[in-house]
Length: 134
Length: 134
Image (cartoon, rainbow over all chains, first blue to last red; front, top):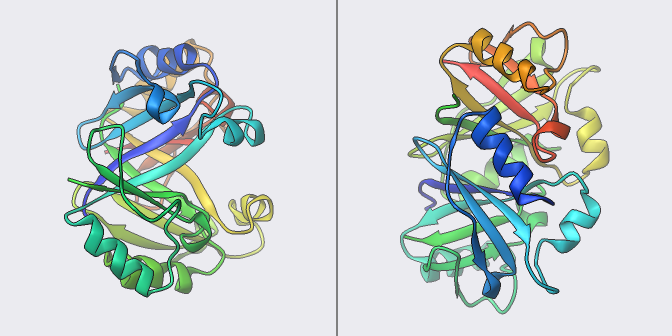
């Protein structure tokens, strides 16, 4: 059902410093920062040959990663995103197994302009899982 | 400098239950469990089209993930592994930038039979980074 690993998201307190580490210390190709006010984050994409890392810095008052950074002041891995072909069919199958879909259960348009859903970490080994329809 | 994302490791308390979620709920291809006593873990590989997820369950008294699971009873993302061509050259460059290499700084043979090093989470946005020479 799940396909490629679309990205791993890392919440960071200081996007400039985190980007410099990936660009200068680890020698990776990094994008320009993009402010996504509707998602409450500013994001930098680390482009790897087979997938990408997303560095997320809180943007605005209601950022979804603000509380995570309160608990994890150094930052840390925030979620993992798997690709699916049909997000509604996947959601319905998951719900039949008892897995909890966050929010109202309806896909939202994610940071890449595609439909996404988030699944409850308690159902996935303490890992926040995003599904993205590609 | 860094290349492909080799894997994301997720520490789990109950490998059988976590494997069933990936196999049955998420429909992924999962390997048989492999006990790696020299690494203090039992591992299941989730094979995705572009990379893999490693589910790690503690094995033995001195498991490196036992303390992580004390802090994160539901489990969670434990580390991320990037591939490098030359682990010694990479290590020396990283040390010049002030990044801290864990342990004695010498590569060990990792779970895939290849040289690996771990880098201090405080230097990488709270994320434990493994480097694997491929």
